[in-house]
Length: 104
Figure 1: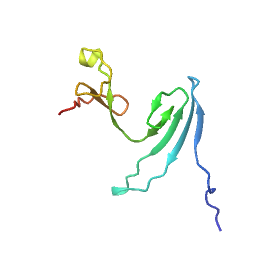
Figure 2: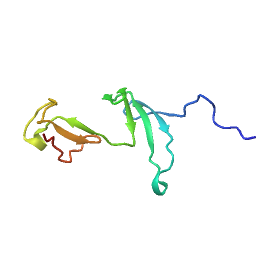
Figure 3: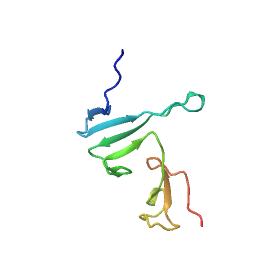
């Protein structure tokens, strides 16, 4: 009989980056989809990270999200924070601005 993974154990990988940040990554196993495509999804922690979807320092890897982002002078000729109104801009993933604007 071949032993399987430990019950109740969560696989993860700890690392200290050259910047001094400690990181921890927990993979999430997802079954293969269409044509055998299998995304690499996980949960990660970075001690120098900001407030993410899962709390301070924690983030989800392998998926993009559309979120509101502040206006910048380089892209909007204006500095403005997030106001939760039609003037907000939207970012894809880690801040890329594909030009999505809210419409009424």
